[in-house]
Length: 62
Image 1 (spheres, rainbow, N blue to C red):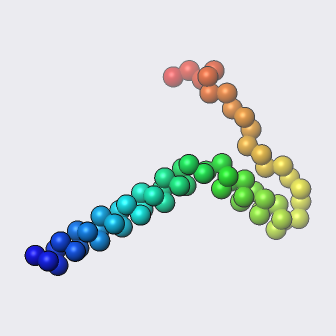
Image 2: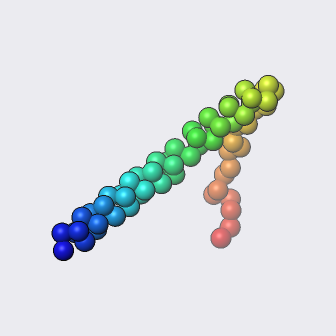
């Protein structure tokens, strides 16, 4: 019984950690993409502006 309890606790802790990682990726997606773009431009040596275009979602129809 004790083994199953600790197994469940470990699984819940792993799921909580995974949820925190997913939340952080979603919350900081723009900054992550900006960092990757800067790294890509540093490696390739060109000064391409990889800035995300501002999209106005209010005009989109559902």
